[in-house]
Length: 116
Image 1: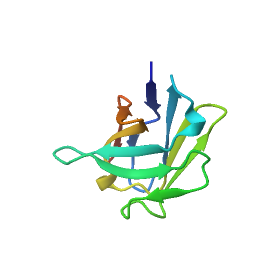
Image 2: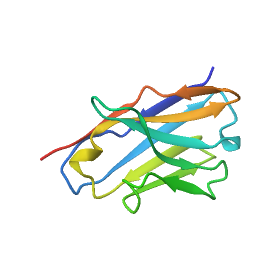
Image 3: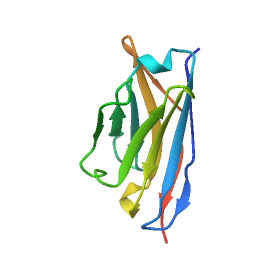
Image 4: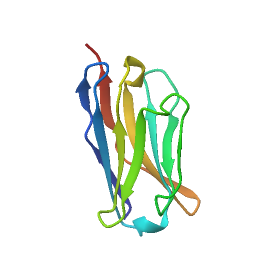
C-alpha cells in the first residue's frame, strides 16, 4: 500500500533552519510529482512546494520563495524540504502528498514550530 512518512520537524528559533524528509513506498516514486503542503492552526492547508518526477522543475508558494528548497532522491524514494530563514509564520504541520491517478495520498505530517 502507498505510504508517505515525514520526519525532521521540531522546534527552531526564528532565522534557523530545518530539513524535512518524506520517504515514500508502495508506488514507483520516480514517476510522480511530489508536493509539500502545510497547515497552520485555524488555517486551510496550503501548497508550499512541488517538484516534477525527475526533479527538473520546482515551484514554490510566494511566501517561501528564496527560503525553502524542495529536492528529491529517486534512488532513496525520498523528497526533501530544506527550510532556511524560518519565521514564526512558518509554524505549521508539514505534509508530503502524491497524486496517483485520481487519488491524493498524504503522510501523517511533521510539526514545525518556529519560536524564540
